[in-house]
Image (cartoon, rainbow, N blue to C red; front, side):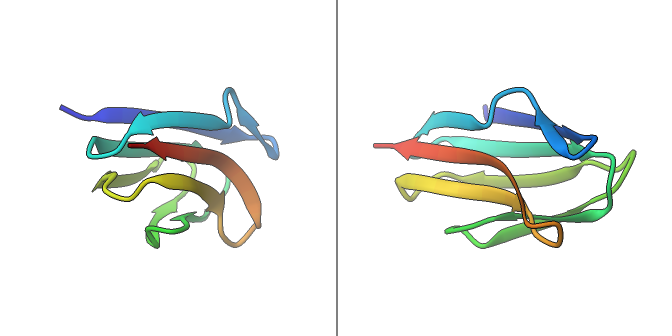
Amino acid sequence: ERTVVDVTFRDGAVQGPTRFTVIQGERILILVRADVTDEVHLHGYDLRADVAPGDPARIDFVADVAGVFECELEDAGKLLFQLEIVP
């Protein structure tokens, strides 16, 4: 079982929440839909996935390090959300 962090970026902004809290050790699926072509980058874990209109980015990982990590559209320099991983 996994926790899904589902984010939509449209018209230059994130639609919905920009902070998510999960428990350390959980399996996480980050799903990003966007109306632009870019790279989604989860800092701290240094995980990346391409996103394009109609082609969501998927980052699937185990949240084994606690902390607060930023996920952004790398080329645009736009913060998508913060992921807080709590012990």
